Image (cartoon, rainbow, N blue to C red; front, side, top):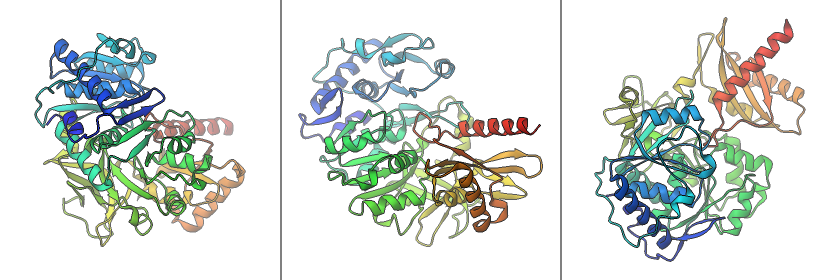
Length: 497
């Protein structure tokens, strides 16, 4: 089945508002007719089986174009709004773009060929009906270009089957209904953001596109628009807790909150769970290569299994395997692997890269973890982020978790930096509270680490920052932090000369 048909097959109230934003309200009838009109236009102009690039913020334009491309049997290429011109030019060289849909404010010289903006899209009339172009389940519906850790973007190819399987699974375990409305702050070009759109349309619910520059504005949006759900990455919740009245709010319409996109410190998970005991808080784990979600921790286990990512979602077999390929025993560390219909077809134009992470239909995530006696999974870090210092293999997670537990600390990122003697030196970058004097906090952190951590896990240096840089997916930009540490070390070297 074409994924877009799957999204709308059970809609019973076409007059219901499904997309709300400062632009107004789109009913299901409005949305479907706009999708049909553009899908018909695309088939008449380029047929099916082609690639169409989409570059836009969260708005009606993005949603209509994204769904119309897939409904027409073409492939949507999603790129982030912060993409540089060289990166965008590289995508054009790599791909076979027939039409580019570009929000007017992002017009760039690197864009090539036919361009349609929100202004020109308005001239394409809606259509009451359009039969979706027949698609096979393994046809690529969308390519999501991930941010990556090196600046080189990888295109993750997701099929109609991938999208249907992941969407259905999430709707099932979250028990979504037509009465659910999600407050969306995450970008829709990001797999996590896209899944919020997918799941609430499939459930017959609705989403509100929040455009607040200050994240605290979502508190007002949740209340004003009667949102039942809210989703964020770790930085979202850290900002809400440290910079707003979030934990003191009642949020009467809110039923559930979702957290994914990285590790949120146990300190913050506990704060949220204890502040909102009657609301469901789900900790989730996923990857773009797995469409979106891979695991979830039920809300009633958040405190009893604190720090766990839970177990595989319905339809996904999630296992932690040893280097020999056998399931680890409780307490042993292995790599998280996944199998199921949500696993990507592969990386665009990169069969070698695909073969490195997908073997025998199983995705090797690169995340190291343990399991407990009940099968709940606990991540220890990414294999490529393991710090090798003085002959020890050190996971940053334990150090980050401990430092985050200290007063005056809002967040912590630990990295390894090349060192002539140790191999790698442990560097801790700490986001601090303005109430705590910087010089005192550095000493407190180092002293407490020396008392509570083995000597080889104590940071060599502590750097204090007021804010962490965030990437386009609103996650902490670790490559930017690596550059920051390098610059700070250079300054200190010059000062010591």
